[in-house]
Image (tube, rainbow, N blue to C red; front, side, top):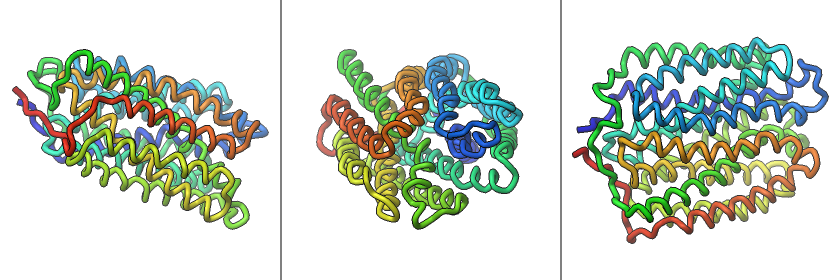
Length: 399
């Protein structure tokens, strides 16, 4: 029988999720300071050097998921903790754009481990998988918030290099604790005799996989455009009321912290209601919010950005919940890896395109494009298999 992970292990897995997102956003948050240090005139011109991190974050999920199922999730998580720390320390030593790009690409390869390995590990045997996913998602988004405020403070106090060094030290300590508290696996997940909570025919399972992957890809595009561009969006649209970089970082972190709690609400609802209907409501509501933000400034823009990030974060638990619902635990890391490879691989284009899009069309064009992408997400969600009214997510017992 598959047992739930212990509380210390679950806590460290949640910390790992926070670190995963924090590391990926240090560059985007500190890009202005890095550009100045490297002699690059505009921050937009430096952004494409970060695309390798997000590309490897996507395509690396497939081999990471396969190794997680066939070799062991505990071992892969140890590689995550220590590997991502080493890559961050290399980034801190970079003296030019291309050195930094190589270090960030390596960082993305290690960051790819968490989602296909850590999330299936934390939900295995969970009595309330929706709630567990919600808490884990909250932790990940608190990492996004930490990137905004911690990076801003460290850059201002000690330079951009410390913004990579401090999280690296935290990751090493967390890895040592994980080595101590996470029990060794007696068998790899691929050998566990489990069944999915909802049994689908092969054709319907393929349809669900295609729909969830398409929805995840478009949702990840929105996530990358938002989290990598929000700092500069606030700096441009709120300069009339707030012009202090540290205060802007704190205001952005506040948005992420408040919005993150949407995942707890959604996680609880997932355990009780239909995935498809909840997902559609959240995604469709994003469209008018993004359109309203196109030409907003000042505190109105701030309020709309808070609402959009709440909706965006609230949509995140659904793809993980669908994997828990439809896929056996012995296959979850591999299925998650395949889904993430496509979704994150495609969405990495957002990091490359963000600077050129804003440079040529401004943030109004970017926000309008994001509204169109949200519409594509809604179309993908509509293709998911129909569910009975009130059908909730359940954790299947091992057999």
